[in-house]
Length: 451
Image (cartoon, rainbow, N blue to C red; front, top):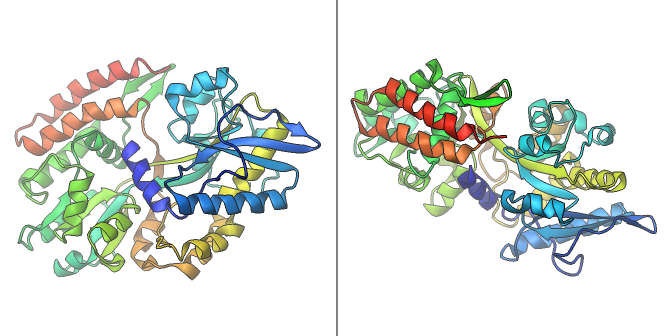
């Protein structure tokens, strides 16, 4: 969801980077390719000048990369993949050789043949075999060929207040792993009184639909499924009903969600920052926002994995211009691996970032398994400035959950599902079956436009 992406960019400040003038000019058309044996590739994802630390770091990285790879030159551009202008840029020869995408983009791009097949070029790529299959799957087409590489990911879980857990007689090192356990913990926290809320959730500005999607996933269901070449709504199901019933019971039977509803992320973060909220659904990247905005301490908060069977995850990565030459694709893969998928540089990056008030050690962007992830974990542990033990419940259990991405036309679907969340949380006698049936019909109409 767009809101999640913007929040993650805040956490990345001081880590993600860009290129200033002097190394490469911005704008114009992509370079033609090879000259005197040197391949020039255009790449996007260059942050704006308003992020000077990022720009400086990226400048250092480009110089280091070009020194190690004297036959490759990087021509960086600001921006990312914009669906509104993408096709025109591709048709006009303006699309970068290596372009940034979100996990919701590759399926459509692959179907429209707007990304290059890189399957034969990654066989000898360092650490390729350690990239988790679920993230490579995002960039894999129906033909089982690979069209891109991940470089970041997030998973929703539960942010919780460890102090309130202790006051309520709960173990902060053993947070809930099922929704029934969440319900029981929320009741105990709410019983503390003084305006304390056990669990809160979003229900407007598309954030309610986003979270209801994760509820349904966690209950073993889907929001949309593709069958016989067409997408159809799938949440009018047992998983959908169980999700709404749990929300209804926590809100109306237990009174553990508080009387104030129609919340969005800023409202819930404020409640957590004020020490009046036990738990809410979010990614680990929410913790620095709460700590910095409300002058709290990292030690006050923990992260648990999503209760249930699956979680809503997302992320980003890079795809390659279908018109790029083999030389440029190979060079692009060299760049993406070296800059974004390189456990050997993690310690250097953590040390560099440690002097810029950047949280190090949050359970984010865990793309690898095996020795590659172990190498990154060791580096993060060395330079950690956050209590990594507080995130152990998330790291250990999240690895075993199915990671599911957003449905197609997600924002339009979320608008519909916002209404479902709002009805359940504001109307005690809401007809759950009718809500699901009506919303399903509307979402079928939205999905009918997906090609």
